[in-house]
Amino acid sequence: MASPLLRERSSKPNSIGPIYSAMHINELDKMRLDAYESSISYKERNKRWHDKRIKAPTNYERGDKVLLFNSRLRLFPEKLKSRWYGPFSVCKDMKNGAIELYDEDGNEFIVNKQRMKPYQKSVLDTNRDK
Image (cartoon, rainbow, N blue to C red):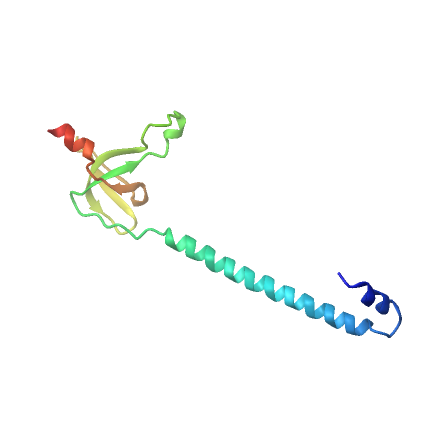
């Protein structure tokens, strides 16, 4: 917003109009540069946030215990029911991101490695065994 003095002078022909235009262009350039720097810092913050959440690939050995995520549980919405099934044992870890598992009955099946997490025996399970 221009000051009233500048507006008054710029309305007169050939008085201060070109100077005001140059000042206005400089302000626009400064605003554009500030917006550019702001967008760069936003992109850097966003990249750091996403990079922190990238999981390192997990390699499983034969005989490791894992849990399988059931993504189809939404059909019967039970809030407190766990979506993790298992434990299953690893039969073979494949290079293409798949993993071959077998259950206690000996049934073998192949699933995506992203649906797995390592099984850790909880304190409640150890107390139940005693």
